[in-house]
Picture 1 (cartoon, rainbow, N blue to C red):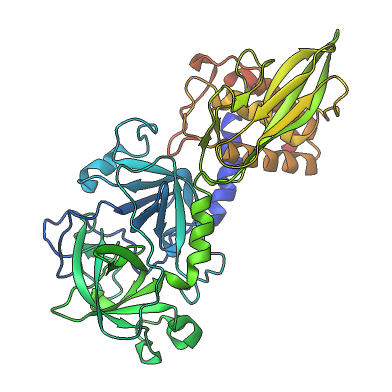
Picture 2 (tube, rainbow, N blue to C red):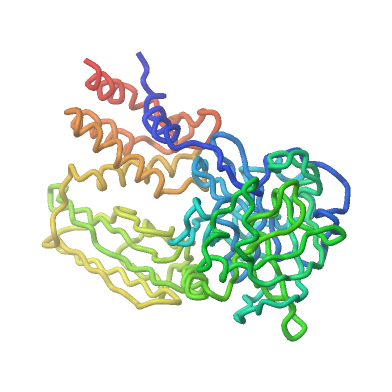
Length: 485
């Protein structure tokens, strides 16, 4: 029996247990394609490229929301737009002119540096205090794989008083709700805008039992929200406008004052936005993680290979939420790494056992990393450095993932962190069930498979997992058989 598909099944069963459609008030899975110029009583928008569409693919469907580009590689949207069943590495931001046509390009968008109307979301950070039960504070920062080709919109760092004022709403949502709960709409996927009256903070009277938003009953929440008048003839937000901006004019420039998350039944009467000014610390901290945080290298261990030969294994921690490019040279110096095994693009997060360099007992290795932001760090290795534990799950998985992702047929955008977390979790399961030795034999086989596409199976439908090699079927079959017999 061939158990190759079982590798994905182990991961898929975990993902399926988490999968559920996000029950958001104003994201959109409804009908799209209307040519009408309404947001609901709005007009087609052409002057705010910073208001982007947020498209998230999940195992159970896709979600369309809106967002605002607020700093290089940084977009803010609503927290409830983030799907619990998101396919790894398949959240995108669209900044082109024809979303309804261009969404057919997904998920294979051009790499950064190539012409595109799409950016990939490398990571996201939902506000740590967010509670779906009260829809507050309904904000998430998206960190992108590239800069967008226009200047960001500044945050409004002032408090809007509770008086009638003028603002502007912009979004990619529907023009018409087909059901009162706005689960079905027409016209989503076209960017529209309108001027709206700002009514200040909501009151307890804005809680509606037939359209419950329980945060309206908490005065501490209400004070950090803004309400706009969406009664006809004024415009209003609709499904798909969640995460979109409420803009105000300051000194002749539009600034972001609120992030949309709620609207009335049938997209009528009112809309509610989370204020920006109470959460400036959150915004500032996440903007720093778009490339201004540190990247720290480290020596993991040294492995003796015999006959006076050794292998030094290295990793790093990138405190940013985006890939940071540190080119080879004075800022990324490793004289003994003659094959450039070390990265020059550093993925976000902790990257254990990212690469290795072979050396002789007489050698001493020195890797110096000096990112543009953060401290310069030098790590050294020689034959007396701490020895490797060759059964360490991170070591074995690091070798396997590095080789899988280097295969010719591999998805070049597949996140190494996802491969590592899946692999380490699976290794723990095999250890618990007494089959860890067999599973490690399979991973070690995977780490030695040549990179030619003919040695790998990348044919699994539905999403882009790391490749699996038929060269290691015997080892994989032995590991799976150990579980069941």
